Image (cartoon, rainbow, N blue to C red; front, side, top):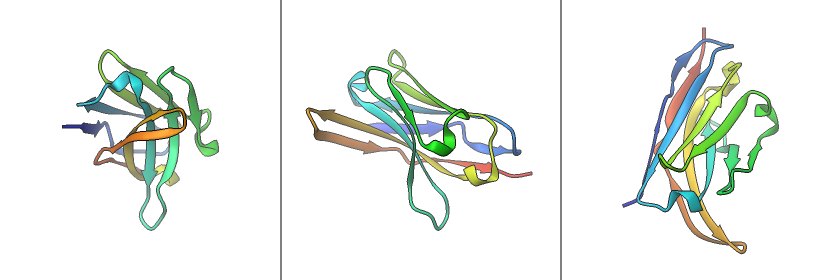
Length: 120
């Protein structure tokens, strides 16, 4: 059974930091690209950051320089370090695991999400 379990969300003041974690089980974690998405009320889900199986990273323009995605394959865990948080970062943050090979997607799994609220 595949599980992606996010943790680390909460209430933080503007300018503060949070570190989200996503622990995966039931998959060959090191073979998966891992993504963090977020969804705010009334808005579409948006991609925040990606890390490939080889450790290459990519970020949405609004998060470059503030967020850092990383992975620990020994712990089957992906992290999202979020600094200089703004009120517009308030959203549910979701972990996503994708298995692709030669342009074909073989698996796509989602966690339940963790709430991040940035407010004074």
